Length: 198
Ligand SMILES: [Zn+2]
Image (cartoon, rainbow, N blue to C red; front, top):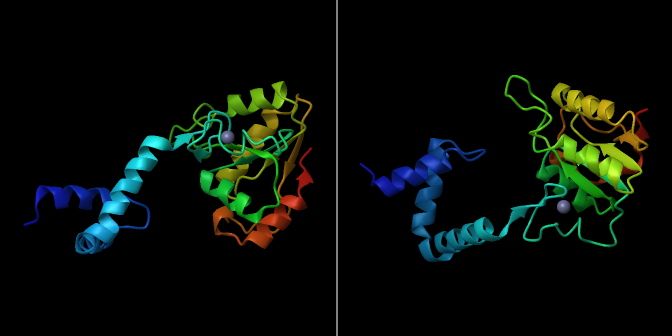
């Protein structure tokens, strides 16, 4: 019934988080109705983002700069690295404005069944940073889920023989609560009142 173009874009939209086939069709119809005011700007914005935004080689953040605006900012405290699961968590911490250190984005959590090991999470890069730069503290800010805590424990073990202090976020993190879903006051408190793990 529909043209190949519409079927193709529908199949792509249906793979986006929060969208199934029905919402994908609604989005496409809406975009087609608002071609010049919505669809063309979206198409241009996607192309610009695709061409210009990269992963930071140091922390894994998304930015047009590499090193990113955080890693290249002389006012950020390079002696503290906060380890987060996803860029969404990094952005959530940035919105609080309370954390002035740097980050390491894992890009996921250890998962043997899914084949996600330490290499996939760039843990070697984190350990190298922790040992070679003037780093004093590593904050483990992964979620309180079992995979989140397993990953935090693994990283803490890797850092046992280094000189850095390993800390975790203070209480206030709901079980399985990802930083991105928490309000800024709660996150700000959780990071200010962090505690040493060892
Ligand atoms: Zn960076």
